[in-house]
Image: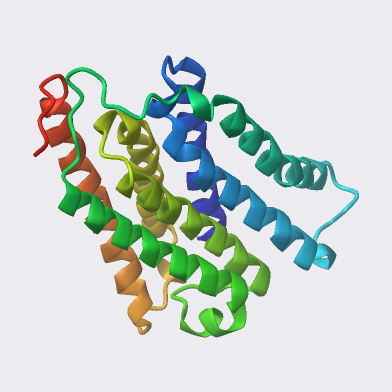
Length: 228
């Protein structure tokens, strides 16, 4: 389940960076950069903490280590070079996210960040309560994956422009759909005597529903400048 969840994050990230390559305006993609920096940084640190768990003479290790030891710096550099291009004002007709909704998104994001930190800092404690089998390394890997949507939520909560949230929400929706499909495939791995099993699945389903509804409503308002 952890491996498929990681693959889901990769595919969602691939969609995001495809949209980055095609983007015309910086602010439409900027919300995804800090989540990627956090994700890659946590996996880089986890690699160092669990160095003995890796097969160091295998090409896949070179790819893994090369990716997570360089990506935080490359993505941070890209953010630094482009952050001044954000006008910090809504485009003409840009739909605006309501303040209360942004508060909700921020609170949900903060909750995900807390889970990410617990998995990373106290993996042994989280392993005991987790709904599928983890090791300290895979617990920290799961922590990095929870950091992604958590920091996305925090980033969206401080920017009222729908045009700033749309692309990163597309990426998140794709990842969640794939994680739910992974959960169906790995159903036998779940320990449903653990409350976190149902909470994990219900939270994912709820987040996906929220994103779909929000995306539909805000896209309909795009071009009108409606606040909601």
